[in-house]
Image (cartoon, rainbow, N blue to C red; front, top):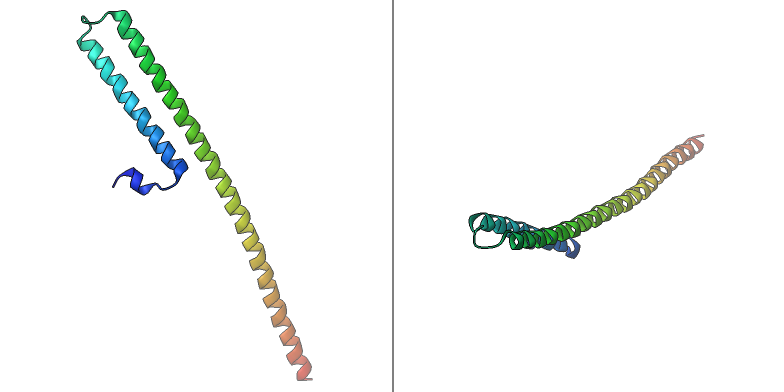
Length: 118
């Protein structure tokens, strides 16, 4: 099963896309390094170094974009957790209030029964 079928959120899909681009750039850079080692005599060392430098800068750009997307995903997760915690606190407060009302009802019913039996 492919990742693109599992992930439906557009923001997470962009992270997967950036990750794929970064991985492809890493593989391209590794291939270029291997080719330059094999065919070192065909190209001048200066041209090889320039191309490696360009490819490395492109890789760093992809990595920084990936880090930024990762940071955004983490911040979004924190925000979602905070919202969930606030909602949970409200539900807990309402549940406690309901329990208190049940207890008060039970107490008043007992008082009513004791008054009737008097």
